[in-house]
Amino acid sequence: MKLPGIFKSYGHAGFPKKASKNSVDSCSDSIATASTAPDTPTVKESEKTPQIPDIRKESRWFNHWDVHGLGMLSKSEATAAIQETFSSLDAEKLSCIIGELWSEFDVEGTGSIGREAMLRKQIGLVDASLRAYQLASLAPSSQRKHVISL
Image (cartoon, rainbow, N blue to C red):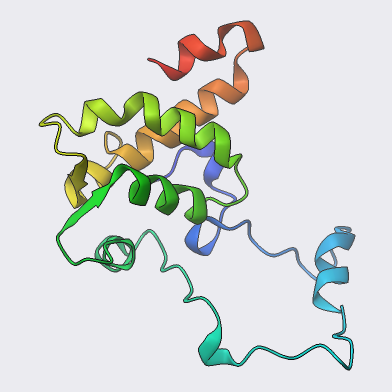
């Protein structure tokens, strides 16, 4: 899936690419070197939340979110999938955008959409949401509602 220009700096699963060791980004260094207090229980690898598959591996990514195996995602599942995949973006803004766009993709009014409607290049819900998010971020605040509803 080709992502809009603003998202090219995103690596695996929509997370920002890691800073290099020579980077001046002190946040990544402080997180990586933070130690656990001796009394803090450690979480076993098997108890961690499953990692979100790379969205570019479309079938695997979609199946990760299709927990019921029906080949469809509800509005809340689709919203969570996009929000968690692109977790560095404002979740509330994404939710509003998806809410505005939803009826264009759920044309039959079933409350669910399939893989094609979700991931179709340039016109699926994921790409349309990211494009609307980008446009809303660039527009002056007085025009943002209009941009989202395009």
